[in-house]
Figure 1 (cartoon, one colour):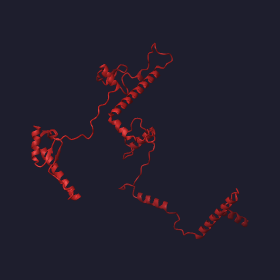
Figure 2 (figure 1 turned 60 degrees about the horizontal axis):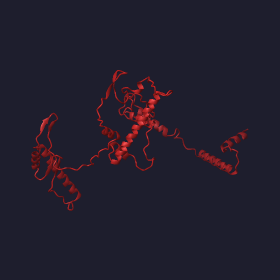
Figure 3 (figure 1 turned 30 degrees about the vertical axis):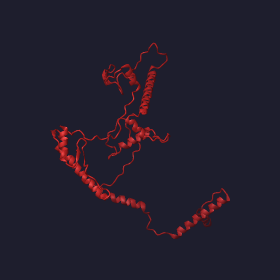
Figure 4 (figure 1 turned 120 degrees about the vertical axis):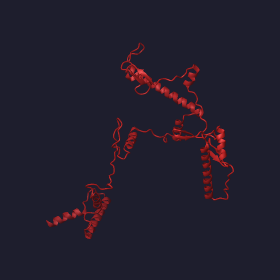
Length: 332
């Protein structure tokens, strides 16, 4: 039935080959004379032919028998005529881990476990792993001593060390499984992405540095304040601190002045002009005063150069102050 509908849909477009399974159409009799046409003519001809082929696919789709459902009319596409190649190669099978090899040799079958179990200490259902799990060692206040325990050994510290060793062993086994998978070329996709993101140069200087706690706090503070209100009306997470570098937001004049805002723009302009212009800009320039000040600075500079050349450590007073003292003596 599907082949008959596909043949009927293909016969509607006499000059085209329509493959509804791949939603594809082609015209085998069409040829483009590239040497005799300009670039613009080729572009227009390709657009025209693509429009005709898209219309042929649409006509063949609407010729198929449709069924009306809750979401509207729908059709069932026939199987594809052409087999298109894959973009990526087929995924390679992963090599079995050591535990999978051991379970296969011993005939151990993996059974699905329940995610929750009954906890007798709290009389409630808890998860079998993670935070606040069932029969958690941290919830046990007293550990019964055994005959084989050595005197003077802290059982809580011993239990923490054993757990640390188990975690290290598990991590070692995980890295070994990844090495075996890398030899075959069947690494997981997320590890392949992480490997391509790291520059392979053979030096540790180009490796990305581990993010510090301060950097993460700064990024979290910037993200929390990146709103229109600057994070003022956002809900804070439990234990979240205020951003350390909270900058002041810029304040602009309102577009529509409200009550009591009539002279705000004028005051702002006056403030800018007063800071730019001098207070006594209308007074004429005293040329004689400027000349005397220039001569005094020049003489002081010449005296300092003579003092440095002679090597004396006595500090010479400026010429302006010496003139004042001499004038006082003559007046007396």
